[in-house]
Length: 283
Image (cartoon, rainbow, N blue to C red; front, top):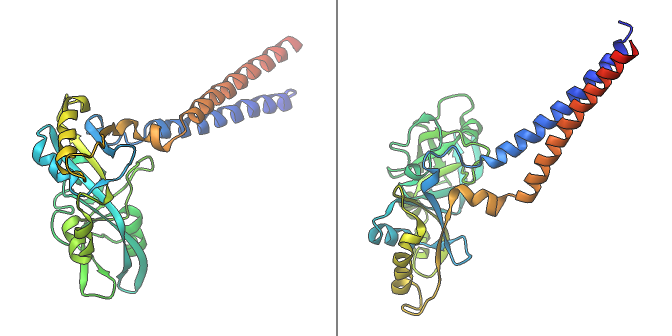
């Protein structure tokens, strides 16, 4: 009791140090484990055209037709927004369109429904947990119909996913390309060998490395990219496991924060020990 104030100060210093360490550690851990929830992470690659992150709309179908090592793939098109409504609720929303292989490439955790049928049927959509809560509250979202604009076009909810915060791929409402081309016919026109509006991801067979299919990729460029036979664009497959670190994160800052976290913890522990020993000697 006589040393109560001394004890409180000592424990407060240690507690603050540990709390600060844990906060920094959780931030660093979250950054280092980006996209790790994907079961196929080691075999997922994002396609780059030269240094450009967006690709031509016809590239993925051609890759799937001519490169057997491409097990699956998906394009993501994010240029379409509408007024969307359910009963008396209405908000402007952005729809993202993807190929039906989307949930074979990425493994988002479903909290309602499943990847089958997912977006495989026309007008079928998968929505995020936040989107579901926004429109349907705490009621089940499966089977609900969301109206597009003021038309008699309705999107049917086939699934709800809880998208991890450390995911590079995010969406509120995901539909198929077939759905997108029906709602907005202009989408089909821009998917050619000229426009680069799509983000393209491929899932390679186990053990296949990008270098082993580079010649096949460049043959596609030579035979299809404009001007045909003269285009020298290099197609690059960037490992999705490294994508966040290279494109979205500041790895130098992560290293600095790691050093700071370890330093804070070390100082807190050493300070606690020193004060404890000093107290003992004063006895």
